[in-house]
Length: 269
Image (tube, rainbow, N blue to C red):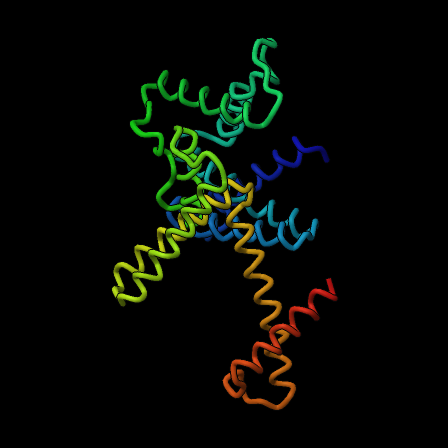
């Protein structure tokens, strides 16, 4: 079965599930009730990507695709648009915003930075033509994005508008400055200031990642995964040695076991 046949089959199954005599659960879903499933499936795709399991990745992409087809079907029933409109709209957008690929040869983009610049300019022109020109360079970043991702996108948009450190060294210096201000707030014991300074530190750290070409989300997920693996090894060792819990060991003993867990996992990788 080719991709067209497979996709047509999926759309048909969704239509059947939503039709009279279909599935009661599918029939009662609304755009509002589907929201948490969209988020959940997105994160499950990320987990599968991180695990590197191709079969699981394929399955999770299917679950995510179902959410797109499901929402399009709900909109089709309301007379708004259908899945063909969705596919056509994104296909048209891709062609418009890649003139160096689909154009007449007058636009050239030999590197990714030029592509991004052209994309932004074409997008701005589209908005102006549609009468929806944004008032700020920061417009268009969803408020509902996870904080880490939203900070990244806000930093990118500010940089595209010309407000940015010229090099990574500048943002690293700013990181040192924010760390000092955080320490001063902690010394004062001012809870509101501590929260504000911690936020400043985190935001600057996200921008440091951007300057260094590091995806902040991936970096944090990787560190969290490594911490979890090491902690589980440490925890199992403590319990296997007859201790009731980690609190039974002093800081020095825990640090030795932590370093041993790091060495063990480093040797296994």
